[in-house]
Length: 267
Length: 274
Ligand SMILES: Nc1ncnc2c1ncn2[C@@H]1O[C@H](COP(=O)(O)OP(=O)(O)O)[C@@H](O)[C@H]1O
Ligand SMILES: [Mg+2]
Image (cartoon, rainbow over all chains, first blue to last red; front, side, top):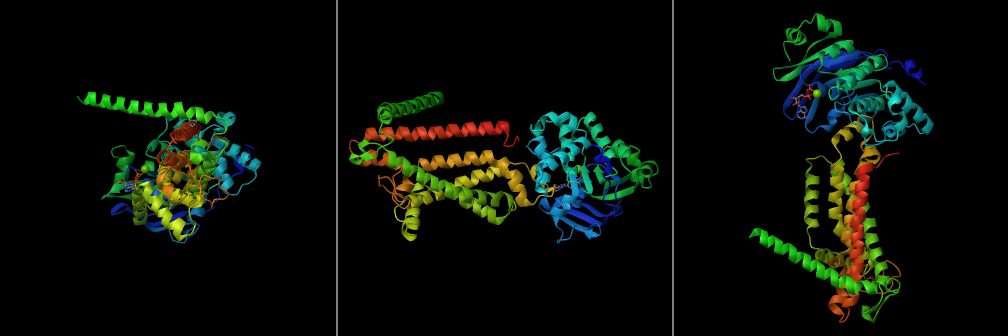
């Protein structure tokens, strides 16, 4: 069963996520403006920048979680497989089925550990209980949680530690085999040890999904990502000041602000 | 001074409760324990006999009220909490109306029920009219408590389940409803309690007839109407009134006891452990 994990390959095969002239405002307040960027498939892209510069807002556009915020207006385009997902015709439910999301604060449902993963699987059409059980085990294995919880699959998920809860949320998302996984500061609410576990998990998932990880931890971005995007609050709203392969962004940033931020003089 | 007043007031309350309970229990208990109290119908206008048809009518009236109000209440609460925006004018209007309705005296519901169900819809004095009137009466409270229990579910779960590709409706059935169940149960039991204790709304709708009802279109007398009648209209009916009161109080007490137990066990265990 474990060797199933390695067979999984990234399904995006070649199509980048194309973001064009994306702007977002809450009521009359602009959060970020004119963001254009191509996010490479099957890579880990880190979004970094000081807090309040619109990283979470940007991430929420990609799976249309922005729909839940009253007064939130999004302009521009985000193309996934060529289709503009911001258009009115987009089937957001289908979209979110393909684009998983991990929230800053772990949010396992107040159900058993097992049902946290098997309930969504069942809803998405896996009616065979045995098959669901296999996927539950496989996903928990991938996040390194199986050995810790295999004897208490039927206890409340909320009884797990914060780090375990976050890994359960990751297992819940990857059990549905998304193409893209959005992670919003997945480690910020966790202790260093759980944070390290999740970091190595991101490394292990890099070839299977297109990963977009928001982090405020520069060292972490450097360790886990292939590409890095720096957001900055400039003239009152967020914009991208630097993007490219992580090595380049960290060692030869072209933008002055980015240089100061990477060098630790700003932010 | 203030201390003295509140002590006197507490003592007075305690005494009134004591006198009430003493009369009710001392007179009522013996009658309640007699063999035919729960099996016979009232005799001599209620001075003797039992309350069997009255228990049956009560159960029917309350049963109809609950069967009608739960689905309507649940649907309205869902509409208010999950399917309208927070700043919606419509929801604001509905909520305000419900709050006003919740404060309307029950006798007004009785008059409305009489005019609408008994006369306009031609149901006459019947258990059905009474049940429907009670449903109207408990709905405002039921809707608001149910809505509150949905609101108590934190948004992070709504976002979490939406991010897993659930439709709004599916997220309600798979997650929000199970999470709101403790509140739903408590709201329902409160509603049942209020319906069971109701007199005024029923006098004009389900009526006074103390025979065993043959269908819900028959008039039927509920426990509290029976108590009212015995105490007010029947000289020498007070001992039976005490016995019936004791019976009613015991039913209500066990309901609130049940509510506490359910609420506690559900909160501790969570709805889902399987
Ligand atoms: N729901 C909201 N309503 C109004 N303003 C918001 C909301 N969410 C975020 N903002 C504002 O938008 C800006 C960007 O926030 P956010 O995307 O959370 O930044 P980051 O994740 O980089 O810290 C902030 O100034 C924040 O105050
Ligand atoms: Mg954020």
